[in-house]
Image 1 (cartoon, rainbow, N blue to C red):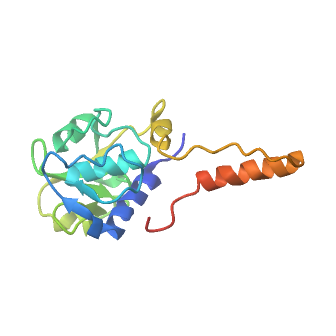
Image 2 (spheres, helix red, strand yellow):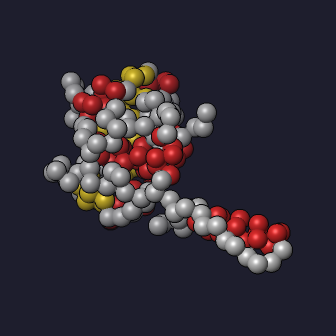
Image 3 (cartoon, rainbow, N blue to C red):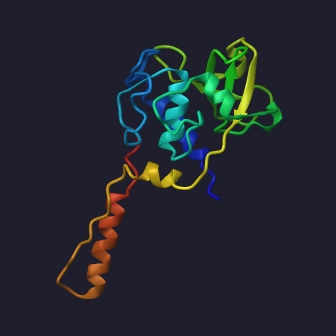
Length: 193
């Protein structure tokens, strides 16, 4: 089984790097980036939409358990996740602040020892890197089942399909051309894209 948590964290850092292209909104458009090609900017979201987007772009199951239907909030994240001890926290887990159904959620990017570091989308100008203790509210940590049949495949459907290249030369040249086309079609976006 592939560890997808580094990809979730990667998309969190993508948000920090591109924070100027993120708009904070609790309105009906807050989940509008769900379903977009990974790395598509600009993004409009709130805290729960941001962590959901990081999971979507990483090719994981919806942490809300709703199949990425543009719904979900801290309460659905609590209901679908498994609460874990602070000592067990790993990058890619979530921290939910506040009682009951929660008031805020952030993406954990460091181990659970001491005061974990998170990426938070709590206001305009975010996502930003903050420590759990900076929030001041009670908190809980959650982990999610990130794998399942077709999860990665659905996320990769946004990538361009490799084109078959037919070259009227030797078979070796044709294979090299097809390989080059596949590499170009599936290449990672340049840093900052």
